[in-house]
Length: 79
Picture: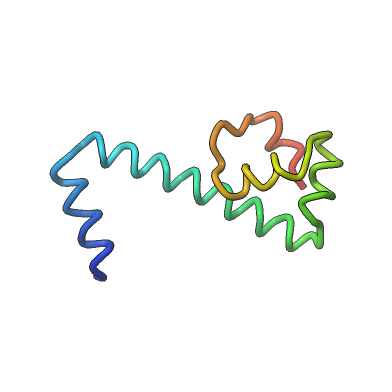
């Protein structure tokens, strides 16, 4: 186990609130990564997706990089 993972595990054991927020943040991060991979696999740009979803490139970038406050309705139309 590397030092970062050891630190995370230690903090989770000491602070249940940290554990919950860390796990939620990690899940959001994974969603963004999966969306970016799906878009790239389809050969689409962020601009392409933005046009399809009638939004702008910066919104797509925010979704892929932060995945915060992503609506299920938007995810249903993503690629």
